[in-house]
Image 1: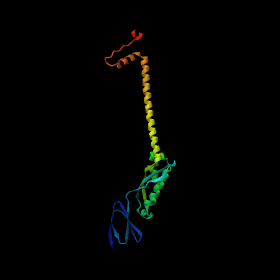
Image 2: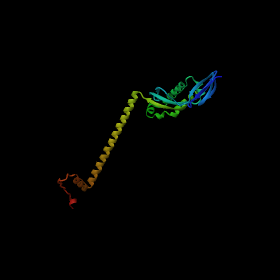
Image 3: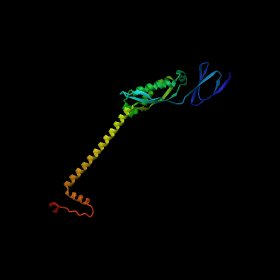
Image 4: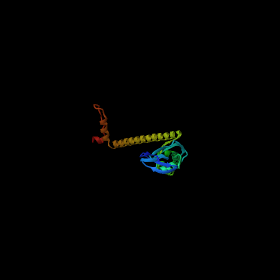
Length: 221
């Protein structure tokens, strides 16, 4: 029987079929290949599946556009080849459903300001069963982008601006209060100690100017 050689790369596995039946799973290296043997190469490297933006509703009924990225790899090449005609489509559907479920449990404000509320671990766990069924493993599923409707974005911008203006007014009021308190304390001190008032007056006079101080009876004594 005529025999050829087959080289399997380090990042792949090869399924060998003869007369429609699986006869071997070949790992990296050089192998003999008999005639009538059909081979299927399966890439074992990690892969990336990025979903197109999905229109989903949050817990408070706001429609947002969100997308996730799925990192996955084949762990069982035999199951991967035989379980589904389109394994990536299976993962795509599972990721869609996981995203919709996760977004439906949080508010628009939460998902926009704190994307971590949509847990990577929860998304990964939701997609994992679908991956298991096709001989694959999900490394992680990450919420990548969340886009709010224009009206909601504008409202959030106005809210942030209002908070900033309010904080600025509060700091200004605190500064004015501190200044008034200092002036009041200074006036009280000068009232209680007239000599300090005269010293302060002398310090403030322009050099060369004449100053006439009217001393009270207590000062003359």
